[in-house]
Amino acid sequence: MKSPFTTLITAAIIAVYTTALWAADSGKVSGRINVVSPQRSSTPAPTSPNPAHSLSAADDISSIPTLTKAQMVYGAGDIAVVIGIEKYQNLPQAEFAENDARLMRGYLKALGFAERNIEFLSDAKATKSGLEKTIEGVLPNRLKKGNRVFIYYSGHGSPDPVTGEAYLVPHDADLAYLATTAYPLKRLYTQMAKLDARDVTIVLDSCFSGSGGRSVLARGAKAAMPVIEDPLLAARSMAVITSTEGTQISTSFPEKGYGLFTYYFLKAIKEGKSDLTEIYDHVKPQVEDEARRMNVSQSPALRPGAEAVKGRFVMRR
Image 1 (cartoon, rainbow, N blue to C red):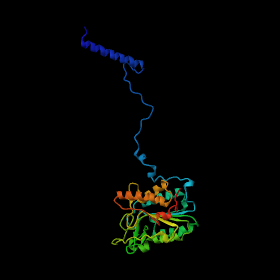
Image 2: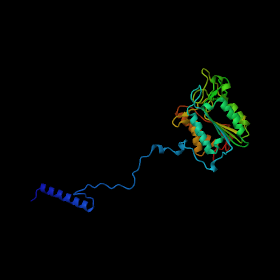
Image 3: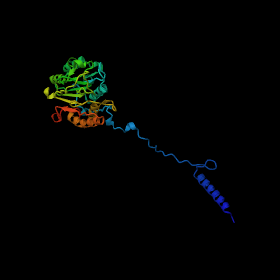
Image 4: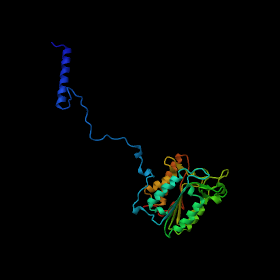
């Protein structure tokens, strides 16, 4: 009679022998016994998602959209003035203002403006005399009757500490002498009203509170309530969209590298918003929400009002 130990050894030998025969029959033996590796699938393994690709294309406003001719409403004869002042001669920087202006110029070309008809002023070129020459000389001289005008300004604003009159602050401005070294917002409206244009759109990423952000005030001065003229007082063919209301601060969007308002304004255009009312209705809550996240109160404004300009001042189809 076989012992249990002998029976166990015999069973093990039979198992090994059977396995070897099976491997040999499958053609997967190398030598006496081979360890079989699993076959690789011809289908590539899934890759981890790239975080950079997880962003919506519409969120990346630096990727300028390409419009068809049918989507463009601006033409070769329309004129734009784009001003971006980030670095000042004797004042704090207006963060990302030059980025804003350069990208705005790119969008205007995409919207149909001829490059030769986009007057671009930034930093040291955007002096008071440079603004005057461009706004009051070059623009009216080149504009033909019935063409459209677009004005964009990104940089500091300032209120007169006594009267509250709002000023655009050129590169070389002296805050102690605003009346002679800065450019009054009211004067901009008056000059645009003189043009024989079909319509004039003005976009301002600036503020006039004197309380910080994109606003400055002479040292020791106390800001008066800024007085922002209604463009209807100048012309009914003019609309102005601003990044703030009243004494609010116009802030930047460091995560994106642009002004907060300009970022959402261009994003709205990229997403297909057509006229200023559509753009304003889309941009206002987004700017307010993002500003609130930064503990800032900022609400864009449209003058003379969303209903007054609805269906007019179209920027794209």
